[in-house]
Image 1 (cartoon, rainbow, N blue to C red):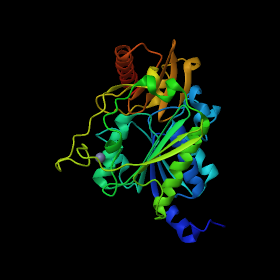
Image 2: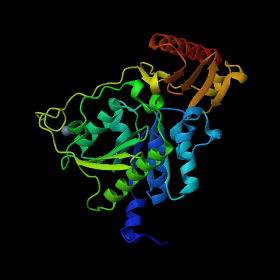
Image 3: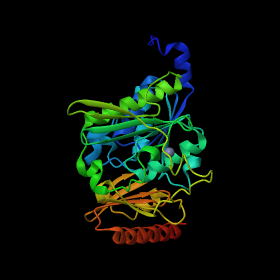
Length: 336
Ligand SMILES: [Zn+2]
């Protein structure tokens, strides 16, 4: 195989033995995953809680219409080896939260951020600080993207530069839109930064933040110094408590609500699906059952987690979830 001088056969071996975790397999995450696989990274752990919807096909790398309503993590894990048979993929269909962040990220050489919210980014940032794992921060909205590499204790952290952001659905890419080109650029740059870290190359965006605007186009790089008083980097040595996720979370511009059961369930979705009319079922696998319920689209994961699209608010979503869990439990008990 012919390689560029910076990689060489030694570098390829290093890439092949690397374990990279991508959290969020939407636009930026799927683009980063694609380029990392193509570059030769041997192990990709792909964490995402969401399914492929018609409105996000234009920004996903590797997904087509046949993947509609399937979990994004599973779709990426299945399609990437077609392009890169040397890459092993490990899909995890779950919500990253304080109670599982250590378990889900354990063993990662680098963590890449393909997220759409700061609540979860702050979890990655804190994990990165506590375990000294490099964290590639990435985001894209409209024509603009941001990218930085954080590696405490050498660099400052995400909260040194961008502290206390409260996620507002009206400012998400679902509401404001995002161009496929900025997604490709940010995902490509993220993969390139990961490669440089794995190959121990100097420079890059370590401790710096890149802003890209495709309209100009403009590329601006600023240093991210450690900030005095940062909750994470400049504390008294005690661990700041990780915020636990609200069991009911509004996602994607307010259109979709994620509801977690109090304790994870273990549902046989094939059995559950028998109580749903065939014409209403959009997809069913061991991981997720997606179906229409009047104007609402419900995704029921085997852990009991639900994504509910088209409801008025959290109360309605919680009511639908509670009814669904009760019916699923009753259905399974009746068939046992
Ligand atoms: Zn900090």
